[in-house]
Amino acid sequence: MPPTISDDIAAWVARRDEVAARRVMEELHPRVAGIIRRHWARVEEWEDLEQEVFMRVFEALPRWKAEGAPLEHWVSRIAMNVCRKRWRANSRRPEWRWSDLSEGEQQAFLNAQRDDEPLEGIETRDARSLMHKLLDTLSADDRLILSLLHLEEKSLEEIAQVMGISRIVVKVRAFRARKKLHAVLQRLEGEEKSSP
Amino acid sequence: MNDPEKLLNRLAAATRREDDPPADELLLGLATRVLAKLREGRGPTLWETFALGALPVAALVTIACFILISPEAQPPDDADVIAQVMLETQLITSR
Image (tube, rainbow over all chains, first blue to last red; front, side, top):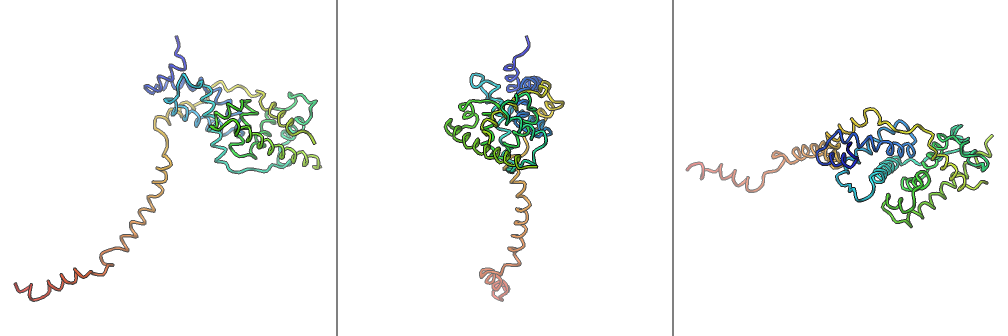
């Protein structure tokens, strides 16, 4: 019978078994990579981010309790916090103009505006890069809240848990962050209408 | 003007669609690098980085102190003068 992920974690914690550690990474990789792809625009940094996430996971594994949060949730939380740390380090808050958007991003914007346009008509890659540009305009914490809410479809309770703040604070901050994005979207729409 | 909330929700929904190939296989060498880093332990902590950075400053301060408070730079105090006089007087040297 092959060892379970809990057996592998126990083997790593007890005797730093590297074969077991590799199996743990293989098991967790799709989830970690998925989170990073959804939340980080620059492809060339994905590998570096994943390495950082796994470093943190293995350093914290001795403190993980099987009877507590499920491993996948616990790892997702670590991955999101690594992204948050990187967003914080990048303090630049660009103010995108319509002309700064690529042709694909402009098309995704216009297609998303049309109710009659099915979602399939919007290129995921363009929508994602536009969404990242919009989120770039927010602070790291506001960005994390909206990313979890809109991209991961997490509940307010789950977001509160990830961030270590109350549900009410999450709700208020999400409302304000959305208002900021609305202002950016309205500005872009105005620029698009006045563009030649 | 379109409803920006609706626009945001449609963009988010389009973003969530999984069009990329799934990230099934672990990136080549990633596991090896993670394990190597775990073996050698973490890099220097913030405190260690600060301490190492402060080392040249501390060395400069020490050298400056040596120069400024060297024995030659200090004027002799009263006890030294008395001792010198006593050593040089006939009273002591004749015995």
